[in-house]
Image 1 (tube, rainbow over the protein chains, first blue to last red):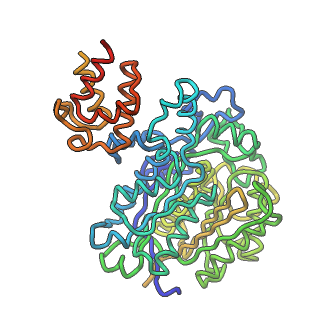
Image 2 (image 1 turned 90 degrees about the horizontal axis):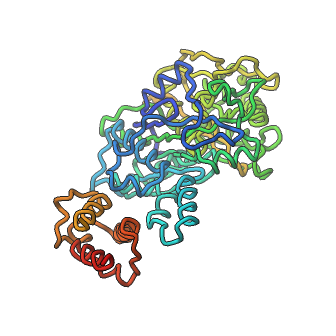
Image 3 (image 1 turned 45 degrees about the vertical axis):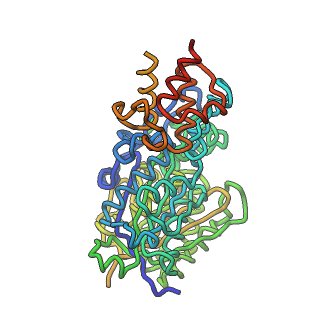
Length: 414
Length: 76
């Protein structure tokens, strides 16, 4: 059933480049890096001492002070970015439409900061000192839960946890909820905050993170020959998506239309992508097929592009296998070069970026791309944003466990 | 001394104004606490006054005056 069309009507963004959509977006277009030395904890003993932390965020600006302490930071981000998105969309949720507005917001890892903190409390002071809010502050679906409570959104409520593909699965699944008629509007996206000793230490143990500690702003360098792993970021990306007639009836502004969604599994390895990027390629093809669009109609691909050796190579290979000769014409950029990798929030953030790219006809660059890896020979919009009309933008997200999600956005025309 | 400190903790934990924390005020009915808030409130009393409040006692502390009386008794 593809009768119902779904459009993007509101955006919310918290990233290492700033709190708020326009602040982050202008940083991206300027090619700014949000990567700095870690301040969340003393990282001096860690191989990686850099990350993309969010500065200047006050949860009390969005959440009642009494409620703030009941949520871990990823929930603060999720609620705050949702507040921005709902306001941006001008969406009123009341008793008449509450059951038709849902929330799909996930996280890759959830409340790691709370787990680490209260585990220490438990060891030092005993089990009686564990706060009764420990579980609700850390479990992944409580972001979606808290958002629904804040806005009274009583429609479908869920939270994917598909590692680095989470945000894209959330938006894609929410798109299908509206398309099949189970809701008229959805608050959807991803949120994450795990710049903690166990978060950094765990990825360090896998040798997955960049250790370019002396040059934080140069550390995330997707597709560059000298890349040495990803840089962790934190934040949230949320969008309001809405059934077209519903959006038109209330005179909402429309950023873009969601045209297609693909989701596949590699069935190959816990952390490495499948050979040739086979699972990623099928995922992109599925999104194109779902949209009924030809690869040549796509002008921009926001790559997963994490700055890891195999990831960037195999994604480039997958794009070539799907887009054939158009692979060399389509602009591909990795905004993770500036934001770092926001894990479960990445798909949400990058969906928001795709919507803004279509709105403004601007493609944010891949920064730090000084010497492209010979295996990565596409047009990665190196180092400088580009002005160009974008008919359609594809957002790629691939996660540990071999889970893939692709979202295809197109310029709206009625 | 204890009275003021107890009221201060209640106000902070439940996110209410100290003026609302009158002796007769009930945590749940007047100050907007839910069951988890009251558990955490008792933990805050234990931590601040360095006392232990068994669950069977905690259940009986439902009003501001109950808390003040209980803590004073424990301290003496």
